Length: 150
Image 1 (cartoon, rainbow, N blue to C red):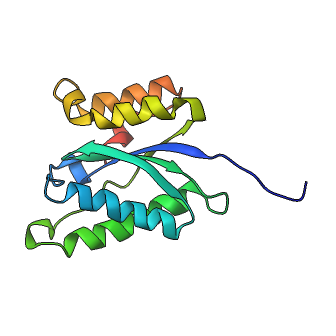
Image 2: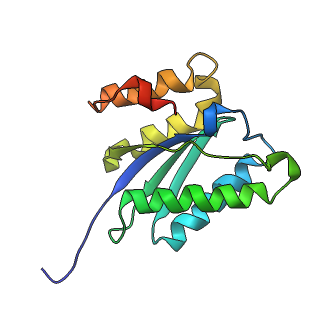
Image 3: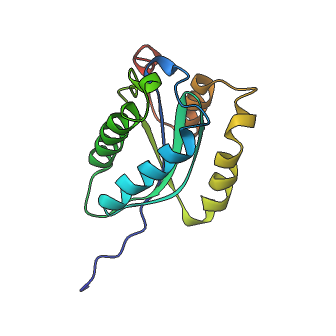
């Protein structure tokens, strides 16, 4: 075959350090836009984003040319630097060390977009930790809880 054709859709979830409420409504839309710009530079595409004051969900069409770890390293590093430059109130902003990356089929995209749109409503009833463990269980990812929240 003369071409390499892929569809690499991934639902990415990560939180602020210690799940601190650092993403306020003033910065949230600009943060998502900035994350989209980083993804484009990495030849990937941010399809949608959502979250709360302490975490983000990104639906990304990932480039076939980079590893997920490389994409996440750049997304988190560059956005952390950027947000700290926006205002003094964000000077201590940090992301958690890890992340969750969950493979997505094309048919799931509308459902995931609807889920991301309702994040704030969803988290009135469910904590980030409960949500994240639910994802790990649904995707049958083995984990040790003592290492999840560092």
